[in-house]
Image (cartoon, rainbow, N blue to C red):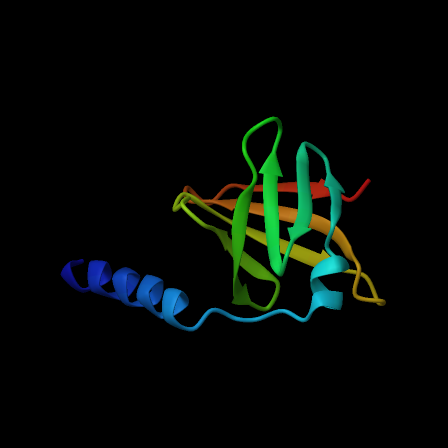
Length: 104
């Protein structure tokens, strides 16, 4: 397991130095309310807000997956419809649980 820490650290550093960029239209297609979660765009940044907590920036990892800046215990993933609009938001918790919320 000694190498695992290095792998995680490398992946985090790589995301910080070269995050995946989304086109504005692709970001706007994800904006909406998914259960208790709200997705918005501020400037050129996609944001995640859960319940009444403060909004947090999303960092694109690729293939519809994002990390929430400042949160290491879960990832956010979107499923899109045929037109590219977000239909479901999946929160992948560190323990392996997945929470699914449909777009309202």
